[in-house]
Length: 206
Ligand code: ADP
Ligand code: ZN
View 1 (cartoon, rainbow, N blue to C red):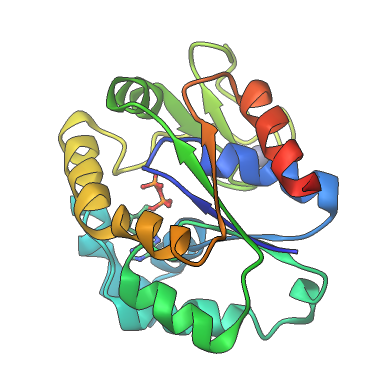
View 2 (cartoon, protein in one colour):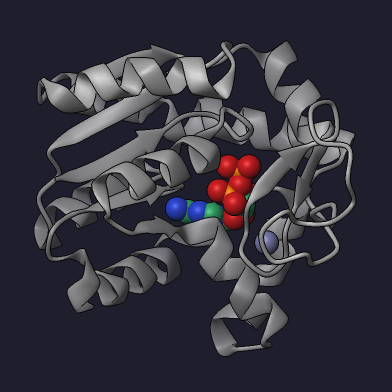
């Protein structure tokens, strides 16, 4: 099954993706994680993306489309995959349709106050990319790989507002795009992660 997780920054796409990934044994493709790795490794894609990501703007469509297109040629996606953070524009969604077929789109519908609070208390493992929240997780180290958790460069109050505005303008139109194709399912992203996952599981079993 090929799944897209759609939702604002901080809606919990990464967290839910890792739960689905474990359950269905299919990989998650997070464009944000891939771009950040490229920035760390100073690749051409990383150098071209760095300013956009730090300002909370979208990386240009052609760069991200090529990245996903390339990633989907790897054999581990043959039994399905989860897209986290892609597509983020109608142009990206149209391109995706030309090289892969999506089965379900799950919209994680979340209020802005919840989003802001989550992003500002988010910590990320730089090694395995797991995300934690300081409200529920009290250690400074990843429970799996023991690496010291970091605050992402774009997880600050100014950028959060900007990323949300970009979401409303560029990404929210995808809701109608996929609704019209009859592929869109919605879950309540304001709930705790495990509660959200219960709703997602029901959708995946349909
Ligand atoms: P969040 O969902 O919390 O914003 P992500 O890791 O998904 O975090 O994305 C972080 C940043 O990476 C975005 O603000 C954007 O700059 C860039 N990015 C990720 N995916 C895309 C995409 N599909 N198109 C354009 N830019 C992207
Ligand atoms: Zn880790």
